[in-house]
Length: 253
Image 1 (cartoon, rainbow, N blue to C red):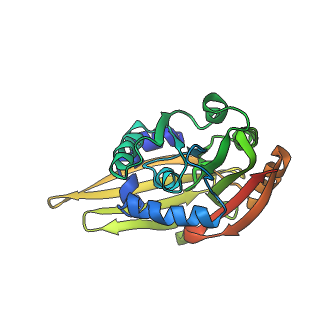
Image 2 (image 1 turned 45 degrees about the vertical axis):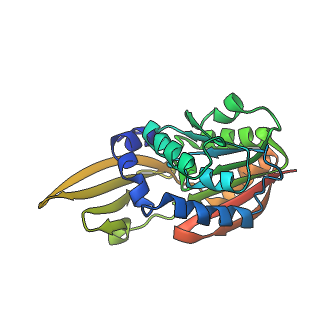
């Protein structure tokens, strides 16, 4: 079993944009609409936003499109950040989007000052990739410290606290003519789910299978809300949205 960054390096980074649907700019447009609806606003071209777990950048590009003058796009995958750099340049956001190759843990205090950030987003399912619940607690504290008064934190994550059983554990992700991805879940303990990603690719008439596994945290939305409150963040919105992701918006008072 690998860590989440190792899993992306070994397998998922090469397929990630395809997994998202293959059109990151279109996805970024939808994310801009979503974030605006959740109350994320730049209020001036100089405002700073941070995208934790940026990947190829659907949220980073969305934040730049919403008018943030600087978007720090933090990720552990150099391959995905390189992809984001190219997409940002094509979209005219090359000056705004600044890739940061770093661990999410400690990224906010390392790259921002207290009370300087207008928006922090950690979306997709990135929050569950952290190694331990204490890392989630510390990330939320870092976000509360970094956010300016009225600044917003937007999280999306899957609630894996209720185990799937039998064949329900086998989840089709995406399938095209030459590529198929399936996810299989196991539950080794109360705090983690073990994710097995299986990707089949066809070249000519031959199919090749790649497999890698990594742990995800099983985070209950109520627990995350409690940790936000403990960090000094007021939860403004909490609901299950598209693709089974739980969306949570918190604000620094």
